[in-house]
Length: 372
Image (cartoon, rainbow, N blue to C red; front, side, top):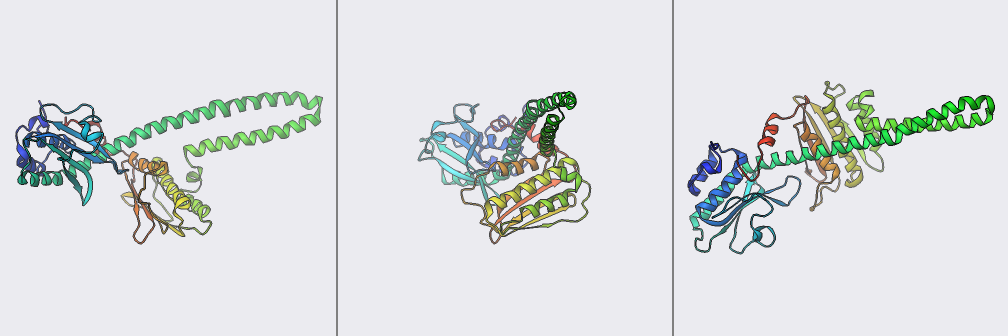
């Protein structure tokens, strides 16, 4: 039996009925498909499609499409060639999807030549697009979270492969060779003490090199400074190291922080370090302020007085890493131009290491082309 909000359960409600239903309790994840189907069949139109803007980019991604006389495309990359691979038809109508005054997507309608929309229809379509905005934002966030977690899984497996390669192909053979060399030295000490002395010096240097490699591997797993100093002193120590070349980094944080789960502590540290590193490399700033506090959640703010975000800003590896570290723990992360110039990075992490159960449910139920 279909769910009450499934598109197949909404036959013939018309545009006015859809406006009313969008005020009620439609499942947000089914709204793109419902809007596309009802709009296409109620006008009727050749095709109706809902596009959503990625959270980390300006490009639009097809979320749902419906053509009269057919079914929704199973392949979201092939809804209608004129919509996807060239300029939209001249008779198409585009209605922005809005969430808190931000354009987050589009409702695109290509009417049939024998059934042009009336003025009343166009008003209803504009209202539908406006009221579908909040639900579309939920879909965007859930889809972005799913993509972030997929990238995290891939990155984590790649990191495990790298660590295994370091241990198996580099550190392991080196330790085995040092063991053999130490055994040979034991015999050489009696036969040629001078030569043994030279090889002992060489052996010592090789051992120091292995120790450095092991420390690097351990740092990649968890920065030792977090255990040795604590998160706030560790951040202040690194801030002092970055405060060079005319850049001053100021850390505003309580001296005594409550105990945090290891995953939250590492995420907070890495986010701050990545943000500060970006300021040092790209912002041309004189002052960078790091604010850190803990109440019900860990609040992180990094603000600089530099050149700010470029107009054609696209998320790089560092920005994606910060966003994904926050998303992994069920937190949030944003970057935007600061008031008066510069850039502001803001992150909120749960004070307890947990995944947002609602986000997990959303990820399990998410389908951009079918409401269920």
